[in-house]
Image (cartoon, rainbow, N blue to C red; front, side, top):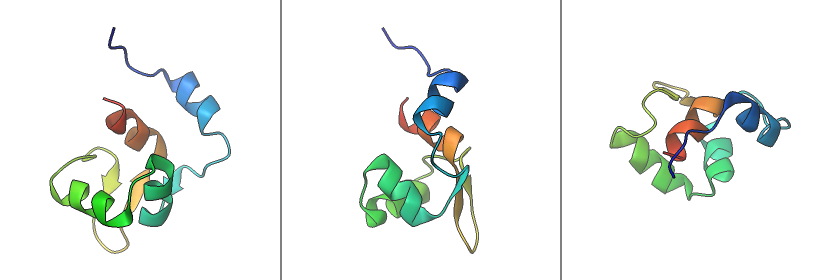
Length: 69
């Protein structure tokens, strides 16, 4: 069964994590190497979660939702 995470589930799991993440924080949260995260972003993954430009930033809740799909 494939069901989406609910907002309360995400909020509970991430209550101690800031809502906007740096690439280093996002990679740590997803347990990916930083280079892998950058590659995924360049391939178009996490499009709804990323704010491109300098500095690159991620919306935590959207990032987790897209990662878990």
